Structure formats: structure tokens, C-alpha cells
Amino acid sequence: MVKWPSVLRSERGKGQNDLVGTGDASYLMARPEKALIDLVHIRKNLRADEDLENMRLNRTAFRKIIDRKRRDDFMRAASAVVDPKKMELLRRYAGA
Image 1 (cartoon, rainbow, N blue to C red):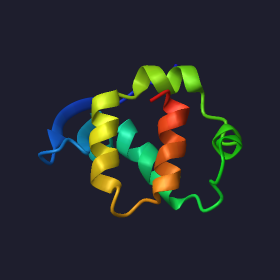
Image 2: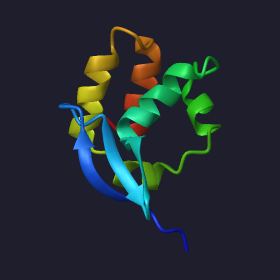
Image 3: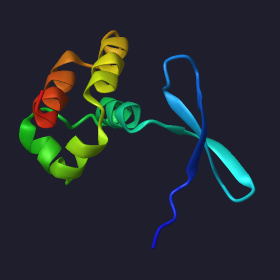
Image 4: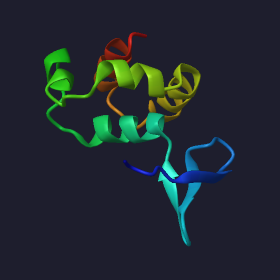
């Protein structure tokens, strides 16, 4: 069974990252909402809903893990950098 790291404290005012730790080690880990937006941003081949489907994200788990308010906050913050078409794909996939 996987032992998930425990959150030690949130870093940065907007909560983009958490300081997490396992045993003696600690590191910054992006929140799921930011990690997903980063992934969508760097994937050049995302053009249609099928492209997101082909990433094989578990939509049920996705909807349970992702906090909608935080996702929307990150999407607003990233809107100047991330292609708006990709943001709309993500919004539809998440069930806006």
C-alpha cells in the first residue's frame, strides 16, 4: 500500500504548493489543481475532448480530488499564459 506524504504546511499565499514530508525528507508538491493546469499547458497536442480522454485521466477520481474553487482560481491566474482553448477543454472535462 502506498503511504502518501503528509502535508506539513501550505506554502505561498495562494496555496499553489504544499510542503509535504515522509520520514526525514520534505519537499514542495504542487496542489492537484495546479499540477493539472501545468500538464494541460505543456501538452502541445491537446486540441479536442478526445485528446484529454486519451490521457487516460480517471474522471471520477479527478472530480473527487479537484477543488472547483481552487481550480477556478488557478485557471484565472493562468489565463494570461495558458491557451484559452485548453482551459475550456479542461473546464468541460471537469464538468464545469
